[in-house]
Structure formats: C-alpha cells, structure tokens
Amino acid sequence: MLRYYGLNLSLQLLRRIEALLPMLKKRKRNASTMFSLLLLSYLPAHAQYLPFHEGEYLDTTTTRNPACAKTMTLPYFAMDGKYPRSSATLVREATAFLQRGSRKFNGSGYITFRFVVDCAGYRQPMTQVLQTDASYAAIHFRPELVQELYAFLKTLKDWRMVTYSGHAVSYFTYLTFKLTDGKVVAVIP
Amino acid sequence: MEKWWPLFLSLLAPACRGYGQALAAAGSPPLAAACGSKAYQDTLVARYLDRGAHRVSYLSPQWGQYCDSLIAACPNIAYAYQQKAMPLIKCGDYAQAFPLVDKAVALDANRWMAYRGFLKCIFTKDYTGALADFQRVAKLKPNGREMDHTYPFFEGICELELGHYQRAETALAQDMALQRGPDGQGPVHFNTLFYAGVAAARLKQSTQAQFYLQQCLKAYPQHPEANYYLALTYQAQGQSALARQHLEAAQRALIGGYRLNEDNIFYANYPEQITEFEVTQALKEING
Image (cartoon, rainbow over all chains, first blue to last red; front, side):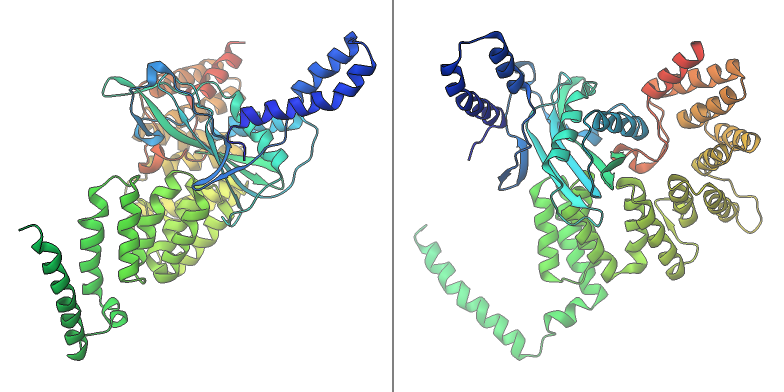
C-alpha cells in the first residue's frame, strides 16, 4: 500500500516512462518523443482511495507551514471558516469545471472532502473523502467524478485566514458536493 | 500496604456480584422495564449527558462515548442518538449521522421528525426529504415549531429551492399568519419576510418582492441578503442608484459581521445566503 498519493503519481509516471523505454532505445531521443513524455506526465491519474482505519483519504500528505506549527486547529464553525462564496456561486463554478472535461457522470448523493486550512489560509493536502447516496448510505461514486471534484476543490484559493483571541489559527473544515444525476446541485456548508 | 489493594479488589468483585444477584432475587425491575420509565431515563440522561458529554467538547471522542454509554444503558432514549449525531452532521459525516437521527425519529417522531426535516433543509439541502418530514410532523404536532420557526417557514424555503415559487409563497404566508396570531398583531420574523420577498421576486412580482424585503429591512436594516435581493429587483427595473445603495449597504453589513441571523448559520449557509463576493460582483456589473 502506497501511503502518499504524490508518490503514487510519481510511480505511475515512472511506469509510463518504462513502457516507453523500448521505443526510446529503438529511436533517437527526438523532440516528438520528449513531447510525448512531457504530455504523459501531465495526464490526470485516476483517484486512488487510501482506506485507513478512520476513513478513506485522497491524499495523506502532511505538510506543515512552519509559521503555523504552534497554532491551534479549531473547527470551522468556531470562527466563520466557511469558504467565502455562496452555494449558488460554488455550484456554478463547479458545474463549469466539470463541463470542461467532456465526461458525463451519473449518480446522486453527497461527496464530502474534509481537510485543514492552515493559519495562513492555505488548504492542507491531507484530504479525507466521504461518499453517500441520496439516502445517506455509504457508497462509492465513480473515481473519475471524485477526482474531478477534488481537482475543483484544489482551485479554491480564497480560504479565510482566521484569528482566535487575536492569534492566527488553523481550522478543520469540509466541502460537500450534493449531486443529482451526476450534476452538482448544492455545495455545503 | 499497596500490595493489599489487589486482594481487596478481588474480594470486592464477588461481593458486588453477590449484591447484584441479591437484587435480582429480590425482584428488582429488569432493565427493559426500567428503561421504560421516564424518571429512570432522566436519571441516565443527567448522568451521561448533563454531567458527562455536555462537560466536554462535542468534537471530543468522549462525547460519542458518553452517548454510547447512555445507549448501552437504555437503547430507547431518542435524545442519546440525536446527541451522538449532532457533531457528525456539523462535520459532514452524513453516513454516520443520519442513521442515528433516523433512530431518534423512530423512537420519538413527535420530538425529532421536525429536527430531521430541519437538518435536511438547512444542512444537506435535501428539500424533498425535508418537506416530507415537515408535512408528516405537522399532522403529529399541528402548529409546532423547530429552531424558532414554524414548520411552514421551512416548507416555504424548501418549495422556494425546489422552484415551486407559488407554493413557497403560500407556505410563507401561512407562516406569517401563524406568527401574527389570532389577533393578527404579532410581529413577523425578518427571515420570513426575506424568503417571501425572494419567492415574490422569482415570481416576477417586483412590487410585492420589494414590499417584503423593505419590511424585512425595517425589522433588521443590516440584513445583507435583503439588501442584496432588493438591489437586484431595483436593478431589474433599471433603478441603478437604488440598487447600488442597497448593494453598498449589503457590503457594509457583511464587512461589519452582520449575517442572516439564524442560530445554525455558523455550521451551514442558509438557502439564498450570500457572501461579500456576490455583492462585489453585482456592484461591478452595475458600475459597468
């Protein structure tokens, strides 16, 4: 079991390069082959679930901003840590994001990403994913859909920097995408 | 001296077992029967929740453990399931939370069905599910309330979000009538007026929408959403100066920390709630 999603990506890339090696031996390293290699390195990998004792994670990388090392981590609701956009705006943005990839999705329910935003307002990579159907029973959506929504989550850069008793603090928060027939219809909280 | 403690405890254990057996022999009520007693349930709630869970953070593992202890002692106390579910919902763990809420409803629908409707309406945006709960509980508890609002208030929000604007208007009018009371003089909550204004706006009834939103602002002048949606109605009528005035009021209010003013606003955005971003975007559009 690979623990780090980032490492897994690197191995996937290595495997792709290995698959191309015979071709490289036969041909000279021309520009088009190098271009293919570069292109492959940017192809999105499928979402991989890393099941742990306390749930499934899309990323278990723990990074720590030294500036936030000594700060408390509080829940989002203790300091108005919700993402500063309305649900309608986020639905519109997420829908546009999903439409850029031409894939069609289906399924109804909820996909939730839980993570920490550090004291400097940066979302931390360690991300738990929770999925339920519309009746709140645990299910798995297509990994491609989860990955697309996770990619959208990564585009959100305006997380609030918050303070508690005058000190900058990190906070635990989440973002849930409510889906109906594969379309985002609400973003929570 | 310390060496005597294990011996003491080993003597105590059979003594306790003997006491329990003696109680059973004396005909003490079986557990199931005791759990049926309201007084006994209250004792357990006081022990495990009031003097237990409620003294620790609900994000602490101990919170769940206290709830589990209460459930283990008496599995028929609906409040224990609701209390265990509450922090899970606030953290987005619906798969764990909702079976607990469903259990609470199964044990005491009169008390918890409206709460589940509220959760579906405000937290998980399951408006169809919320409507079903509020309509069912209205039969059990006519004129009941949840989170300081009548059931028709939440039904109005659900209908609004489902795009059934006429039904939303009807439900919110019912909510207003209930708040005004038999003498018709009672004050109407500003958020009822706000949602009635949005419903009217969606029905393209600009005059009615402006009336409700202005009434809302009379009760709560800094209401960011009322200012914002009122501005949109003015903008639709080409009254840019009035629109800008209300958008700036909304912006000032949001920067000043004013919100829609509902207890659960810290945990979940209410339907139609906006942020400073949406106000800024609207101002940009007006200013061309």
